[in-house]
Length: 208
Ligand code: TYD
Image (cartoon, rainbow, N blue to C red; front, side):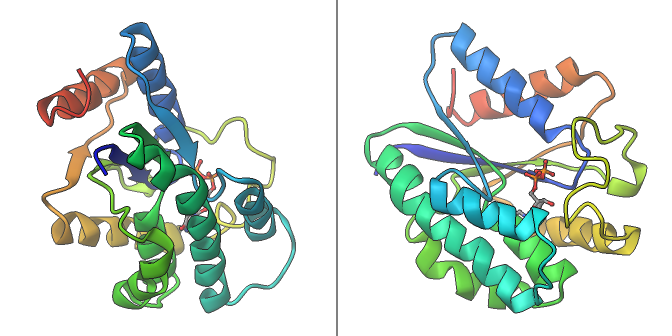
């Protein structure tokens, strides 16, 4: 497997989607190819699970929630991520395993190791090579949620304590995986943040 898997992680409202778009434009401009994908989602089954998880009014227990994210991930890895990596491609994924570890493991209280165990078969050998972590406390996020439904999805409706716990989860993962975490503190100037992300990925020789 000589492709590379780069994941983008962080709390809600830190500008992750904007940064993914800017990176995609940068790679297109400079003639570099990459597969951009997202979680939960990326395949028809996983998109269906995404809508169950985020937009339906089911009462979902933390364990079931964690398994549903892992199930969506298993399909996504099998059909999209693993084949692309085997073909030597660069894969950039909007959220991945670490979102499960932070949201379900820490914020829902299941424990990082438990959720990691649920995900072992789902991720197979596809651990991220690098994780771009947009490090900003969601309570200090200046960006208003835009372009989302008025009430927000199931996760966005959670309270401040939940989102703080998610942030603490990512801080724990940053400590646990220092070799793959590329921590970027978002600036108000989104192009400055973009330059920092490109710089970090160039330094690791993931992109040129
Ligand atoms: P999305 O609209 O993609 O959120 P964002 O724009 O913030 O990335 O919705 C994904 C939501 O699902 C987000 O709140 C994070 C959450 N999530 C988990 O709880 N566990 C997971 O494993 C993944 C991939 C996402």
